Amino acid sequence: MKFDARKALRVQMDHRQSVNLMASDGTWRRSCVLLDVSQSGAKIEVEGTLDVLQAKEFFMVLSSTGLAYRRCELVWIDGTTAGVHFVTADSRKKAKGQGTISDRSK
Image 1 (cartoon, rainbow, N blue to C red):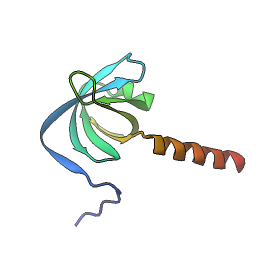
Image 2: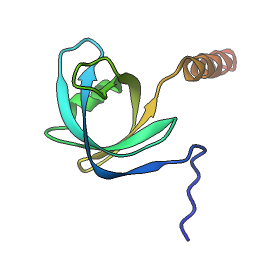
Image 3: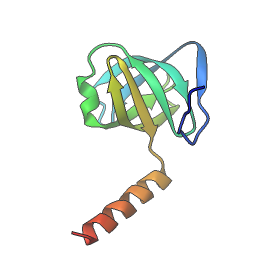
């Protein structure tokens, strides 16, 4: 049995679910396939070069009209597969709080 330390339950995709990644400023776009997804993040297979993911933060566009999307942060890359974390208002507050604490300890 494989232990999974993730807090959120992952849903595996039964069929190819095409989505797009797009830069926050709209300067690049990459097609990809959603492999699994949870409330907090997703695993994707990216088509084309991964160099654009160095931006660390981007959008995952879930609909062809662009009306459904999630703001993402890159967590890991392994070949053409990547893990992303969905950025929420709560995660931004926690990150700012952690930064503030570490800044004080310097």
